[in-house]
Length: 159
Image 1: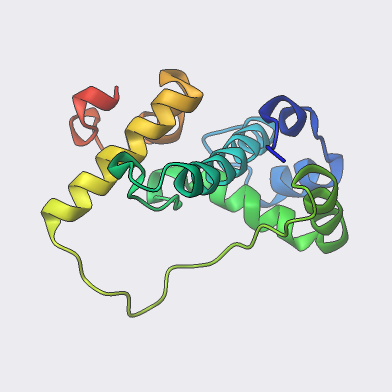
Image 2: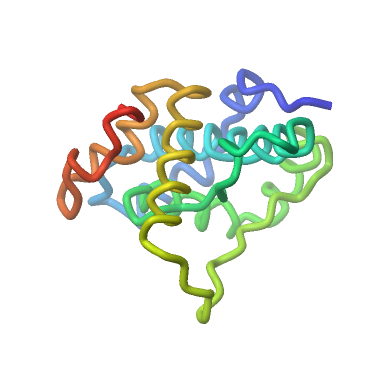
């Protein structure tokens, strides 16, 4: 059964929001924004997994849905949500069809990939975000974090 984005966007958790506000008072996104963007990210990851199963020959799906450094506020919100284990478990049961959505960190010794392969995968990932959640979300996740990254680092076809 397909997970509905609108259903995820309706989910609220005041305890998680409050904890995030206290733990990350200087975040770029407000707590409510970070929570909303986390819901979009979770939906996108589930959609991507589903699309990969349905369209096995589609090379544009050859990327991993991962948190990039630019998505730090969203990642911090996810960490905050995970602290509320019962709420997170209930969320997964009620909103993700009972599928527990794990937060797997990158392995410390991940294999190296070439810059070219990384650029292709990043381009596919950014394009997928834009196609499924729109340019506004893409820019919110990546462009608004300009303290360490510039707009030039985003492929123009993904903007």
